[in-house]
Length: 479
Ligand SMILES: [Cu+2]
Image 1 (cartoon, protein in one colour):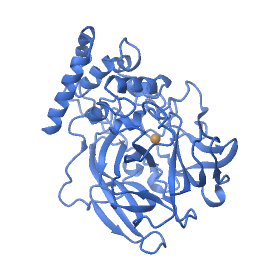
Image 2 (cartoon, rainbow, N blue to C red):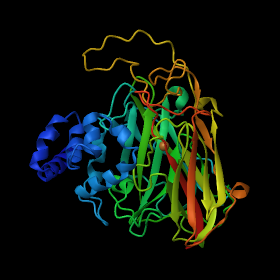
Image 3 (cartoon, protein in one colour):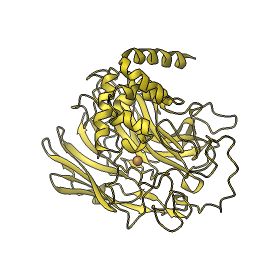
């Protein structure tokens, strides 16, 4: 009820802000929870950009275009975002999720929210806790969201999740996905942790690579700004562990303060024709307090920095590279890097002033859970109840391992068994080739894709899905 009233208040505020000549357009594109998105999009003006893509039903595709980041920044501004305020966009972000999906009440007998695990580090007094966040209901692959995507819980925002500890030093973290009963959920059963972005919100936090920008879309999404929050952990379905202790760091961790608040953006994909309820899990390793003289800080790399993070593969190209460069205004000792690409990726490099620091290789299907099962021969689809309902199995969503035009592929269906990225090699120790970062140096990343080597994911219409190039450089500094 409370959120409904809030939504109503926001809706009214927005309605008042929509110029009268656009009100009619707003009505035309009204559908489900998308009407608010459309109303917002209407603020963008003529039929280009967000508005145009909403009307044409190609918002998913637009998100990966170069103009999208600017458009979202403008939209955020039109909704009241400034240098030090997030505005309304963060408030309405979850209204973009179809009703009944997203966070739900756990059912009886679900796994506990917090579970102590055996310590994963040798540090005296360190604890390991698996936290379960959610649970989240993810729509089935035949159901399209207001964000124009099938079978996705797309960029779902949690603004304040439970911290593993109040005031502590993080030594390690690993993300995962589980069914409600605590069983691992992965591609072999049709569920993908597409990505999750973890933020730390606090007055003295700032995001290394976005704090100079007036508006940063992911920060606005969680209702904050890049000047009071930082992105400090990420995971795709590869679920790369960040273990500072294994990386050779014995005197530093990521410090969590009492006043810090954790927020997360979650993207989960469901490649099955039924709705699924799932937990996001994070296993946290930590020690209480801040015993070290040093601490670890993150630098977020992103081919669509401060924007949507999504990049449309260049039309007709099977081999391409996505890049990002940043001039450092911080200095420290680099202790490790993690990377994230989508299927089709071969490797991602990180360099400092042109010298290779990390060449992170993508490995495919190294574990059975990363191999999508061939679909059982499709039973004749039951006749849809109404003409507006998609038949079961009608859309395979994003999960296809089969490139458009490949044998058996047809229209984005996931008919054959396929191997997906199961490891994205982190760099640390001997594989980390540059260990010093100075102010003024250029930190660059390149994400390499080659669909000849590895098929990428495709949309339900057969077009290549958006890809990503993300990374975090962790560095150690004196506190
Ligand atoms: Cu991703």
